[in-house]
Every structure is written in C-alpha cells, then in structure tokens.
Length: 480
Image (cartoon, rainbow, N blue to C red; front, side, top):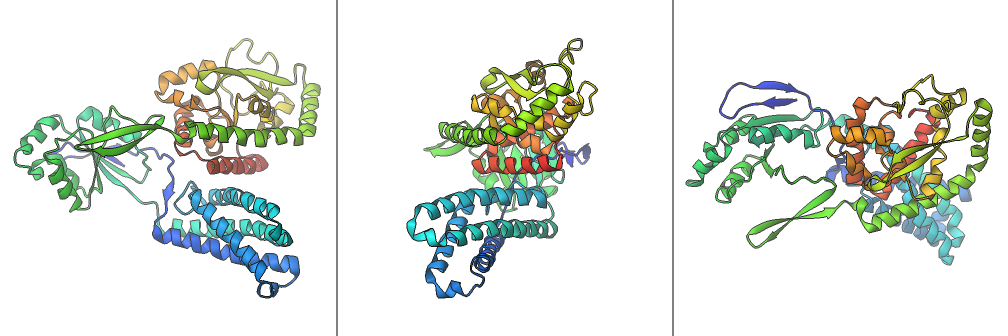
C-alpha cells in the first residue's frame, strides 16, 4: 500500500499498491543455523544410506577409519562450497519448488570439486563408489530438507513488511518508489514538501530537528525507515541521526541524480568527505566474461553432439510438414546493440509476415505449422541456438534477444532497456523461467525488471539454477 501525506496535514490519500518486484530473501542467524544443521543431518543420513548400498551394512564406518575420514572430508568441502555460493545467506526461491531447483543446482556445483578430488587423489580411489553414492543421496536429502525448511519458514514467518517514509520535494518523492525493491505487502508513506530546503535551513541554527514536520509525520505513522531525497546540511545530521536511531528508525538518502544503473556504488570516507566509487556489475567484469564463455562452451558443444540425432529428426519433420527451409534466421539485437541472426527451427509458413511485417509472437497462432505448434509448445525450436552460443553471439543464460523493430519501441518506453544489452542474450533467462514464453508487449516492463535483477545478482550458481528450472519446465511444458 502506498499513501501520500503532505507534511503537517491530517489528510491521507490512498494511491494504490506497488507492484511486487523480485528480490532475494535474507536469512537471519537463526535460519542460517537451521539450514546448516539440516545440511549436516542430510550429509550424515546420505553417508549411512550410501554405506548400506555399497557395503550392505553401516558397520564399516566404525571398522575402517579411512572411510569415516573420507566422508567427513567430503562433508566439510560440501559445506564450505554451500557457504561460498551464499546458500546460508540468501535465497532466490519464491516457493518450495524453486527451493528444490536451487538446492539441486547448488549440489551440482558442490559435487564437481568433490568428484575431481576423488578421481585425482590416489588414496581416495578405494572409496570412490562410496563417495559417489554419498554425493548422489546428499543431493536428494538436501533438496528435501530445504523444501521442508522453506515451507516451515514461510508459514512461521509471513512475508516481512517494510514501512518506509519518503521525504523531499514533490517531484522527487513521486519518483523514488518506482525504483525501490518493494513488495505488495510494503507500505510507503510519501511526504512531499514544497519548501523543503527552507524548512531545513530554519532548524540549522538551533539543531532542533523536531521542528521538521516531515520528521514528525514519519514518526507519527510508525515507519521503520526514512528516505530523504535531498542533501541535508552537515550541521543537523548528527542531531537527526541520534533522534531517529533512538526511535528505531533508519535514515537513508536517495540522490536522484545518482542511480546504480548498470553499476554498483561503494561509499568511503576520505577526511571530511563521503566519496562514492562506481564499479561495474559483477557480470560485466573480464573475469565473469571469461567464466561465462567457458561455461557456455562446456554446455553448448556437448549438447550439440548429444542432441544431433534429435536435431536431424526435427529437421526431417519440418521439411516433410510444409514447404520451405528447415531453419529460420531472424535478425535480433545482441550484446552492445550489435545485430545478429538467431537460428531456430522453422515453425511458421515462409510467407507468414510477407503482408503484415513484424508481428509480436503469440500463443495459438494460425501462422504456425502442425509440427511448428509442437516445437513451440515443447521449446524444441530453440535448440539450434546452441550454434549461436558456439559462435559467440549468445549465451546459455541471459536476457532473451528481441527484434530491432521492437527494440526501438521498447527503448522509447523504458529508459533502462538498453542495459539488458550489456551481456550476450541467452537461450533461457531469469525472465524466461518466471514468465510465459509468449507474453503481450504490455508485459515488457515486467520482463525488463527480471532481466535487470539477473544482471544485478548474477553468479554462476544463478546460471545453473536457471538451467535447472528451464529443464524442469521443458519436461512439463510449463513455459510455452
């Protein structure tokens, strides 16, 4: 809910609910402890189960110290990797099913180094079957315990509500809520003040911040955070900070001319100045570029080899179903705005846009062929894009590429639209797994919010999570 109140007035106007935006949930100390305990329990149960599967009994754990030491080593390595990728600090899962995907993705990351060590260290070779069985069972146990923990936490701790007040000049106060990561349960109190600078100047002499009506209005409404859009004189900062901290209210500043678009900021104190240092998003750094490219090739090349029989069958079906070429090449906008030709299996008649020109794709179109409808429903028409990945025009994960005709329109509608072109477009992406494949152009703002979220929170773990969820949606046809 969002309310507007002019400072010093009694009336309040209901403006409406702010649209929920995706943001990761943070774990406090208690839930971090619960998660660590659950993962340790899962590892122990998996070790016992693996011992029974491999040796028929769990008595060997005590009889052979080397076995126990090997399992403890694998468990410690597993927990360290989970902590490193943030599994005990935050969660991107919005429901229990997403928590299972995240757990399986994290388990895949944790398995690889453990398996490499087992294969490369000779002393561990006798225990490789036991360790492999332990790792496989651990993935199942961790996914189950994480799902259970998420369900309990969701019921025990409903979505926390923020109560935020925004004070400043009217035009800046009106602009701030749209850029905050808010949910539908959060309450925003707008406090526009026409004479903001004049009111602040009057209290500089004596430092009595209680005379500021917007401060009193925020406290009267019981907010837990006060965001100020204007720069305050340093003379009143200590008094205002002490006054708000004593009442449990956080103070923050939102300079409207400085926005973290396609970059992050760090604040450092240098003498009597607070300096803002911009830095590139993690996904835009040279190290991330190298890692993403290696990740793409490690998946795309084996995928093309393994799927070659299926690709041949689809090509034959497309050829026999309707006249025209097997592949369909279409101009799309890629990294840094450079156009490229995306490759798909043809799903429409060759003359589908001859008279109409570019048309936004929709579900159940008459222009699609019989085989094309099946390929679209199962997303099999996207498989040739692995060729685009190998050629360096696309990535496995990233914002979906759009046609130049629509990019020009969306640039005019959304000021941050070009930020999605900072990275290579992807076969799948964060918006792809949260929204239907074919959406109306009115939803492009929502799609952009997911794409920007991906850019701002990127990690290799997040890419693996998206691939895991995409695989599940492919099996159940839920993304068509």
